[in-house]
Image 1 (cartoon, chains in turn cyan, brown):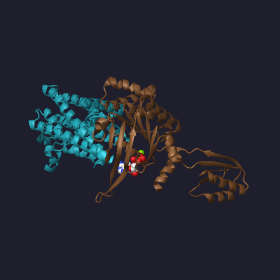
Image 2 (tube, protein in one colour):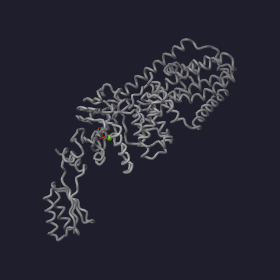
Image 3 (cartoon, protein in one colour):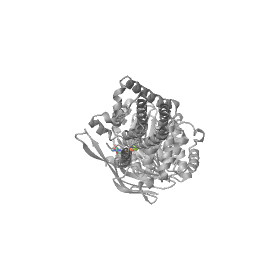
Image 4 (spheres, chains in turn purple, orange):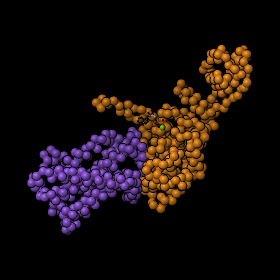
Length: 266
Length: 324
Ligand SMILES: Nc1ncnc2c1ncn2[C@@H]1O[C@H](COP(=O)(O)OP(=O)(O)O)[C@@H](O)[C@H]1O
Ligand SMILES: [Mg+2]
């Protein structure tokens, strides 16, 4: 455990120094998501909002919170995918090989990396917080909801990031995953469109993305209700599953590496 | 001490199209046994593809041997590899495997954290290793601004961060110029002599092995074909003596006659511009050459013998092994 923490701390520091060391990075991390968000908000507004009442959106404010929440959660997850994509460079450079030379806790490496990039999501979270308070006011529900959203998002995104890192370490065809986590994940997890309005087959696919449950939880806080217990249960289940899968992938990868001299195994 | 016994490594190589995968086996290392002692520089000398990197990867626990044992100060490095990793570190040639946007200190902080080192311990260790490789004054500059030599020195510092008992170096001077190479050699020697590190270095530069190593294993085709001190290696395969003869002038006719003498026994390299030729042969054959020159009425201005280098020895060894 001490090893795990030391490795985590080292990774967090290194990630920040290596990848997020300029103002322009931080600004683009905020500017692009906000722009995309504005675009989708105004394209929705150009339609009749009447049809959205079916899915619990009764006003332009509701719509804004709905989209904001989608954007927040998606951006945090996407940040993880992006950072995991850097693994490809590290595999090529040989830094990854040097990391595996050490007796470092392997899970510590993965989760440290994810935590290190999650910081960048905090920018967006602050923006989100301000926007939600402006729209919803600072009543008790909002004030307790925000920290809960933050923590559940943090945990889930970091676990997702660890998984993505493991995938990118071991996958020969990384672009497949990169593409999957772009538009398909956005659509299937219900970032801009609730999962409930989708045809059954797509809804079935949404089950595999932890982002789906994150969104469920976050949104229910701001639609005046607390999340149902079953949502929490699903949330916990999928995250435990991901942790186990991540550990398994890593173990297999290192074993494969030791016999073939190569970390990629599929 | 590190003792490796009878190491084999077969790589399974999958090739061909996805529908008709072929599996081939490649024997990269075939029965290597060696020892690495504290305070000594051990060399693994061989041409490209000889199996040096594969051997070093097994010894550093990055890959597992197909068979054979590796014991590092009593730890079984094949089964208990996480424990063994604490005792060793690896430095490779090439400059990319450190983080270029980070400074020297930041790189070392990171790699130190991977060994679970505590803050205070790590800090003093970083000062120590930076001092060893003389990077104290540049420690807060991002690596991308470093020269090649500085990057390689930082690699050495990284390799020292966990205070390993054994340090492995896979062609650490690959692609570096002679001045930097010389300085890296000085650091390596210092590590063995002053810090009592057991060092294994692979190289295909013979002069490097000759200059640095206390003990050399010559490897070819995944096997050790000779071992000993640099002096012993030279004697073991006593290469043919080399003579350099300089004549006052060389006519085409003479050159043709001399070329005809070229055979298994005698290898003559003629340089017409400098009127000299070098030959690898027995002393008696030199008389034959002198005879030819006399017949052609050519004055000999100088005859000298050239000491065989380890390069000659390696060349003779490798070609001898492959023939026989
Ligand atoms: N990961 C690998 N998979 C399959 N074959 C390999 C692998 N690594 C090395 N080889 C083969 O093993 C042999 C020895 O390679 P290597 O140990 O890299 O030699 P050296 O370092 O002396 O140049 C070569 O023929 C090489 O092609
Ligand atoms: Mg090699």
